[in-house]
Image (cartoon, rainbow, N blue to C red; front, side, top):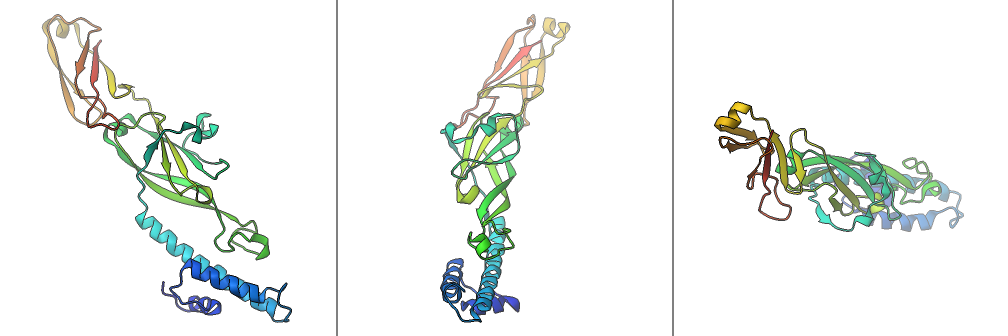
Length: 273
């Protein structure tokens, strides 16, 4: 990291190079803080020196935090993997609140309910979710009131909003849960639950989809061919033989949804009405 002006000043106060890592900055600060802390050093100038060191440390941490955030925004692309441990989720995900990030869980996990359309289930999609999480204040390392940190108002904890891009694979099921490691409160995890919106024309049964196809009496008597626009954007052709009765169910094989964890697809069930 290259610094100019004030940046050079605070690195110089800490005695570290301008490309120092966070660990190097922290180690230098702790060493100087122990040396000049007013409780340990009775020199009249020690208190002023300690304030200068603390301010330099906060400035250095802020610069490093900005650099880290900029890099994360460029590189973060998490593709979630499914988990089966449903008890990891708090009841907050099941009480009707949706599209809200919920701070909770003794371990600092963040729970998120994500809505997707049935069309997005058919094709897969990319989403960006906004996560609000709690982190230990990097400017005072959680010391809070002891350093008079203005970034966390002396609490030692800050709130941070992150925008996380997700790749949602085709075939996800309603209620399926995903784990994103390391993005939750205090470095714990984000848990995402998939919620599939109802569709006005199609009804889902795992990887099969059902729809109703209106056909006139004349078409039923003489036979016809019906075009059905499927969820993935393609067109399925349904041949209705002469003398077909209302209520007849036709099966169009492998024109349904992708089967989770498989290269196969479900079927499209078309009911004549």
